[in-house]
Image (cartoon, rainbow, N blue to C red):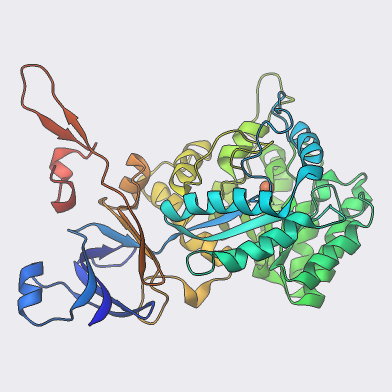
Length: 447
Ligand code: FE2
């Protein structure tokens, strides 16, 4: 008897829409075969038996969601010790600088694990978190290194050493960054637009690249997260990635200044970014909230050039960034809501573009994290996946469909009823409403 079978599922992104049965044993996919006509027939036929059987009823099966950008050390600290009243990035940093001396190991572990449980329930089983290393005691770093091990059976957690207060502009900034590399982070960060001078910004990128090269790590820099069209560190980061050969092991997060660049410079830049092979992470919810705060009208959206970068062949992913912290007071760690907002904010709203938004919370961030052969619905790969009662990726985003089942390494870790309301309109028949058009309804949505 094997561990788990999923019957009558449709693999998202596969060419055929055919129903398949998927077998899981010892934490990995062991078979994907065409479904028997019905579950009873499958059992009668002597097909593989399992300890756990999920009848997907025609629902979609997808590789899990991937969160490429969050700050777990700061999460759930909104309002401590005070609220960010202006809503700017800069007041957020000031609030965090006041909160940071209060950090303890237990505080960081409790808050970050609470949010990781939210991620797991939402079906996000790979998470990349930045952790502030501009702290001489590296309290949050040590706590999150411990958390990375504590959650490993469910969530693959990557940590980025993030110099929130600068590499060149913070005392011992470069030394702390390298100490984080020694202690075992997965990636090196930077924040060049925050450094005191343009020259410090360029130097900070060079330092981050150098440490990453020497320790064999990835790079994920907060880059140009400002509405200043003169902030142009992305060209430095992309060129360094190109010249060192680090290429797709480098990610530029935010790059919101690109939303303010002129057309001539944008054209030049798209070539440099595409040539470099780097990834871009756009955080639509948080940057819609933080950027444009110094504008009157017209007021900028403050997002990077997502549509243009995708057209240029650049790998772009959507991230959440902040969850109830000094920079953003809301959030539920749900990648679907990020994709929903991202589709609107970046005007990716044609059917093909909305489907692309789904890829921007699955395949594309998986590439950012370098997951490659450890990710996806295929025999031999880790059996981590979600079941989504929806017609297709467009439908998942439109109705913001939550997973009914979340499986991590072969273990069913979360279940949720499909969302449905019972409508009792006076004088009419009682009706189940799940926001699927009747003409589109199939098994899972028959109501
Ligand atoms: Fe961030």
